[in-house]
Image (cartoon, rainbow, N blue to C red; front, side, top):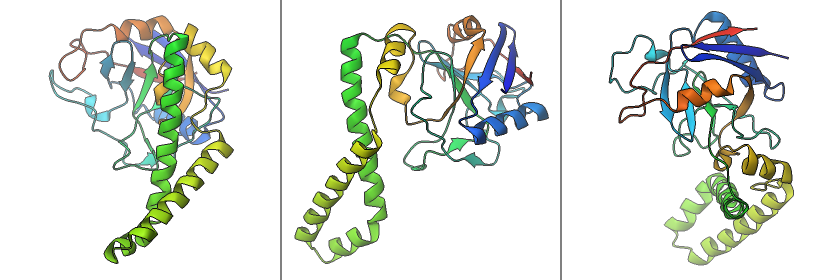
Length: 245
């Protein structure tokens, strides 16, 4: 079982890395052993949401400098697992948006630790419906990309009937895929956690979760309470040192 310690001026955070996400686990361990994270900052902190770090450009960054664009020079393939979700204390990989990253590949170095909030049963019901619709849209968009050349040809030929038939076909395929894979669904265990412990359920299936805080969740709480500037960077720098334990 792989664990790392994230040491900060506010205390230490011990994180267990999941074996179910081996690419992310091994990459994080590699960077930690190399000292990649030492001296970097928690550069993006949003109260009741998350704390983010791992930007190499944050080392020694002057006050007020906007951070978050630094990287390790590579990305990692997504390792989504329905049993690993965005509960409070979850460790997850940051990434660029769907518009430039439809495969949702993870940043090679930037990560965040979830704080989130607790939800009522009513809020969870509404969120569950939104997540299901989101899953349907994502599958449909993926199928559209696969048929892009065919769609473009139909448009050039002004084949409206063909486009409508293809849309109906892709919609049917979408619903079948979503049902078969159970996409956008939340099991009772997840719902229980989100209504008691808290988290950010709307990020599930969007970003790879690859670990969780075992000790020092109170430290994460202190970090997410930090005063920040207009770019969500803490006014007082919060440096980290990451070691494998």
